[in-house]
Image (cartoon, rainbow, N blue to C red; front, side, top):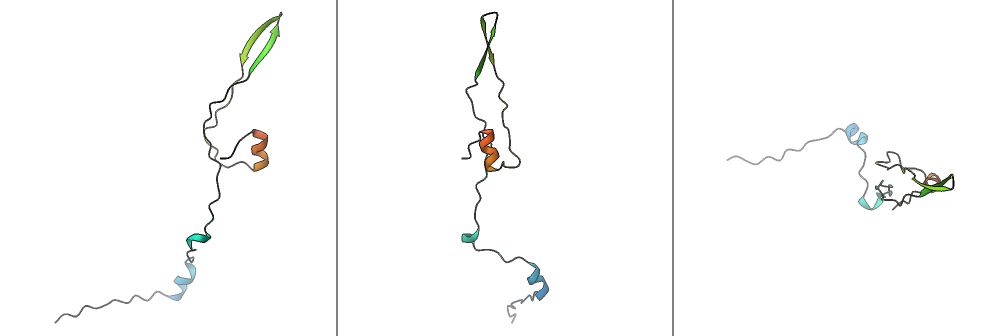
Length: 84
């Protein structure tokens, strides 16, 4: 009669030591990362007076496609980014 055999695999102690112990889910803190979202901005119009004639000249606003490294907070305030 064949008997079901439970196979016990013994892992060496050194292998167990090198593996990082998993943290409980409550300890994992999600840091909010600023996500670059393309924003339709109202472009300011610079008016130059040339021979008493106003010429409307729109100012080009660069579109932020992706922020690879998130800016520090003080730099976000300088660059007028609002982190959501």
